[in-house]
Length: 228
Image (cartoon, rainbow, N blue to C red):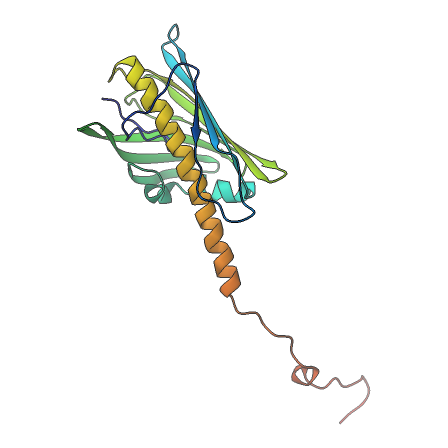
């Protein structure tokens, strides 16, 4: 069994098919008309000589970088976004440095475990975020980043992770778990960006507009030097 989460990576599903250096296409959310975007892509490279995995994921969002950043940096709201993440809270913030604690439940088949992890996060809003474990956890090494770049259609989101083996499952199962759950992560984030953008659009549409006032309502203008 293997389960751990550091900054939005939750290993909480039965593993899918994966192999060293393979790609895993992830269907995105059902987009609104005019908001179609390609499926996300996740690549996992197994580096046995260094005993770690290198994961890269990317997806296109039809929304601007600020919208994507709003989801990524909402640490305390991630519990309702990422599957298996029970809680996420900010312990400390000093400028662009944030200490985040996450509690997650990981499952593999009928087995389950709960993990509590602390993360050092360095923000460069709204385009870059770097993260690493702040205290010893399930992995000897765990660090990665998010990059959000404007694109002609919205944003390009890149996710990278370098993680040592967790030694909690056979290597082929561990690879599958990491790759599948990185794919699920990107899917969940893409859907949440779209959901929040839809809510903001609906709120704007419901907001009452102020009709222009008639000249009479503005009062009578009295030229200087005259009196009624």
